[in-house]
Image (tube, rainbow, N blue to C red; front, top):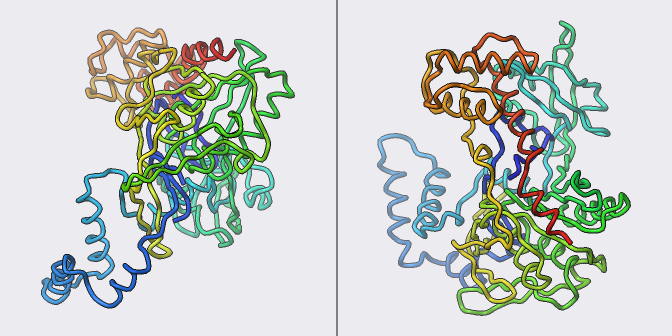
Length: 483
């Protein structure tokens, strides 16, 4: 994923070079395609009557085991954990990685992904060395109204120390149910300040746009996921880029794991003629539902300009639905690498306020009846990522001379890609590697110790990300193809 920019809405500031990572979902009423949902009920009325009046014979052993454990296990058991274990066991028996039981934080995470929003304060937290700071504050948010400032050091949340926590853990404590209160304590110029705020709905940008530096008449539209606001954000972005002079567009779906089916249908419909087939969804009985472009999805807004689409190995499900629909109907060129190959549809059914089941209920076919599961889409124009874009991330926060391991090797590879000679790239922090680290530190205004501390590693990641953004051979090819 062209070292995609990270969301900065109370998200962790990763030190890893962002290469494609898959995680996906399309659309209980929301259908996810590829980690996603297509609306369905957990069971029909007949099944509901059966399960309330008696236990199916196949499940009597499950109930018997449950009762035996509750009555005889040598330690006190949790009924909720036993029930969750039974549910997990049934889903795991399917051998389908996309059919899963989601409870508590896992459920909240999927819900937030679908809505592209969460309960928060509207501040970005970043880690500098061993301390957490406010990196940015969104306008018209609780953080802004309360008086938090960029640069404030995060000390505590609800009175509990978070200074030594990771960004992810600290952010998890700040987030919560919309409308609830949270107390955030920061240090500013040596003085502590505590702000009490009411969490608000923070919506993330799933779509971003900019004119190509290569050709100012080409608009680059990057979609991170297909969530509830994505179609609206896509339309808004197209209009903005048109005003700036865009006469064609590149849709960058690299690293996009998918999302809500409705969003994918809306965007596809905007780019197709009314009546053209977007996707076909087929259940196990062979019944097929055909989704076609029209005002139902696009409300009359159309994108008739020339297009090209960027895909890679982590463009999955909804991304593949959109790509296939535009390629097969409009001959829109696909540029990049083979896509993921996620051809099944999941539904999310709520069990209660804390748990839900995501279950594979159908498969989807392209307009020309191709099932791309485990195969993916083949690019019209094949362009590989540069080797350095696939260097493994560095998990350590500090690397020292004489140290060995995969993190050291990754650091050496990054240094070499940036033009600093670390010596033999073998995972050993040698004298040559020390010299390369010192040279890198000097160039970037850091303390030239030769030891790769957290700041050095973060700067190294950022430098490599910037290099890819500047090089990006796939994007350059897509800009040429968008005509």
